[in-house]
Image (cartoon, rainbow, N blue to C red):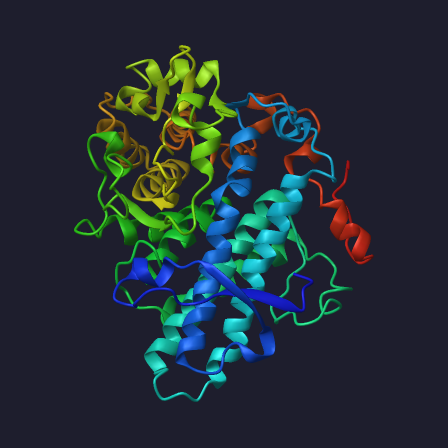
Length: 444
């Protein structure tokens, strides 16, 4: 975010498909003031946003969500990683530094597209294409700020391009409310710019609806969360719960299935390094992340796990390992939004509005897909707990559990966190050292 030059991704393949649009590899650093001048460079700049977003999503951002929850154990030796499990994260932690920097790189690339694409005069860059590129930039910036606010609370809101090292200095952190307001503003701006088409690898109007549903869930605006989840769920020709459960990630050729609303696409040119962390040594990995005993018991219990037991497997030493990311080479997608999340968002929203029967129906849609019986919960308290437990297993190795426990106020009970300051992470010390305007979160 403090750099004079911004790394972009040059076109490496024909533009005949979305995957080819995104399947590119880094080739050069280009001075920002000369990047977006025509249709080709505008396309390149949009690709650069996606590349930066999928980069921070590939390991570090998700590891915060995994390790801070109660599903995953760390089997390695790096004390900085264990800090997340112990909920004693230091400002010097390299993972939070990487995530902070990675998200702001994505945001800065989005800022460049938003600032410069409207002025491009190339007749090949039609009004329709301009709207699409701008809508994608606004969506990805909203996603970036949404991920920042979930980890740190209010953060500096930077909405113009960074071209020199001093551009962002002196920008104080915005409040939590203002940060969420910026996210909603970006989503509202993106929505009419994008078309109501289906694309599981690039943002469309439907993708905006899905993120809006999640946004309103975090805001406890239950009616709006239900409204936008319904917009996606009712498109049943496009989005479906696949059965059996592992159909959305197995076999290895599976990408962009009807289960997926939005996922990041990786390739042999840019690997998703999840695989190496999860797979055991016999499969060429390190198994430094592993399901803990509690999760293994829940997934293997047919009453709670059902067919979701396929998320885990045992190695030749009889140790359990996570098997959502298993492809060789590591081209596994990162699942940002699946249709199962929309069902469980709507279930929670409906239950919160005392529409218990409809909420239970949405919950059961996810349960039945996993070969589980319908829920036996009947009152609001028990149904909300049932949704929480379902989300824990449905998204066992996706970036939800920690954030779910924080947003619902359940982290103290479930994780025995006695200090509420630990529900957000410290601002990286490297940022505090270069900008006096930044303030640290309380308790760090």
